[in-house]
Amino acid sequence: MEKLKYFVNGEFRESATDKWYDLHNPSTGEVTGQAPCCTNDEVLEAIAAAKDAYPAWRNTAARKRTQILYKVRELLIEHMDELTQLVCEENGKTWSEAAGDVGKAQEGTELATQAPSLMMGESLMDASTGFDTVKYREPLGVFAGIVPVNFPAMIPFGWMAPVCVACGNTMVLKAASLTPRTAMRIAELYKEAGIPDGVINVVTCSRNEINTILEHPDVKGITFVGSTPVGLKIYEKAAANGKRCQALTQAKNHALILEDCALERTVAGVINSAFGCGGQRCMALAAVVVQESIADKFVAELKKQIKSVNCGPAWDKNTRLGPITYEKHYHEVLDDIQKGIDEGATLVVDGRNPEVPAGYENGYFIGATVFDNVTEDMSIGNEEIFGPVLCVKRCKGFEDGLEMMNRNPYANGSVIYTQSGYYARQFARYTDGGQVGINVGIPVPVGFVPFSGHKQSFFGDLHCLGKDAYRFFTESKSVTQHWFDEEEKKAKEVDTWDGLL
Image (cartoon, rainbow, N blue to C red; front, side):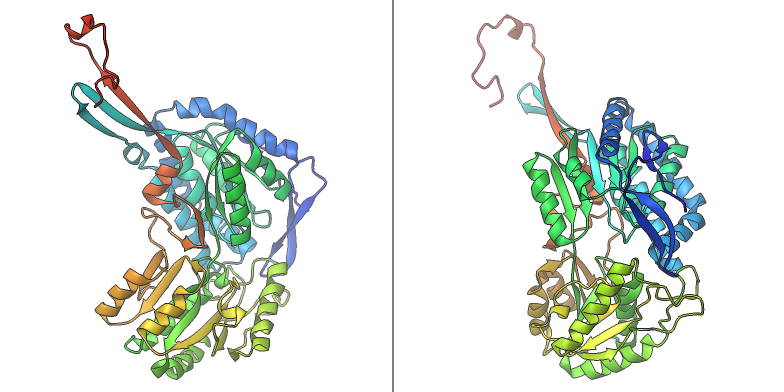
């Protein structure tokens, strides 16, 4: 059985650990290898390598740093099919979803290539008479990225690493222990592109070693994606240790569906949003609030269109719904479906025990599942399930539906389907969601705009991507200068504010 290595200082190293994570192909259920639970010393090696690489990398011109990232982009394109296959095999995304995962890593890399422009500061001549002030943006040092299982390419190498290193920092990535192969392969491509040894390091480890990262004085910042309880703890611990932190956490995204919507197209959008990536994304559309006047028609059309959402091996380009990523979560989603039945919701479409092609019976497959008549006192309608389960709630109209949505503690994204410009504008203005879709089921902006979750979907001050990313991975330094004329050279007294008032 293949035992993966960890990547430190530009090389793959054998781990001395006696603890290993079994890696599975979720389409078959087969064990495909093992990833190390790196020892504390091995994590310290990664931090030390990043620290040692920092001075020279910081002093590399921004233009030269981005030239390497241009090469990374080329390699991502060149190896698109290989990386897509890796994501399919270790994560369970369908081919098109996996290609999008890799494509988003490319998009984040393209954002990073703009570092010479987006790292620029500001200046003002004669801020005070004869005094000029310039603000620079500078890197901080070593950052750590803590990665979830659901996007093995996009999150570590789209959201985290590219802008971090483009700004002159170095990074230790804690790859998802159950889906690390894609991250390890992309780290190898960074080396091929010419990234200096130690600038990017990738480990797999447990919570114990993560605590080492959170407490280590050489780590200046943390970027995290994962659950709300864990994200809050990481945010608190990072702050207690004087580190900046951005923690992108879980969600329960809702859509408001009004009676004037384009019904068939709306249902198609909801299906794509709810069941794409097996519902295992923080922007999944997990609940819809439907105006009562069209609710029965909406559910009927939903049942009709879902018939074409077939389960199958992730890499089969005819598959529309891939498996749950790992076995433990597969059983958790099944338990949540049973919980919905027990709570009294109407199970309209039952995705348990779906039909799959021969040879894939042991895969972690759950078909598209729909509950109707979900009320606010039911946990399935308010808590994240992170699987292909859609909850249908009913409302009287716009105001009622918006209030229902805003009562949810999470606010990553929110969506409205309507042909009314008035209601669309009111929704965009008053929804709590940080990323708003108007007839767009997955309102994730392109990488040049921050991924801006709100409420319990985010902890921190600066979001990932966009200009926020450049602010997060740098700190500002202001330089004020003044040059003496011949008369002032002779002065023996200086004003209390030295001319700055």
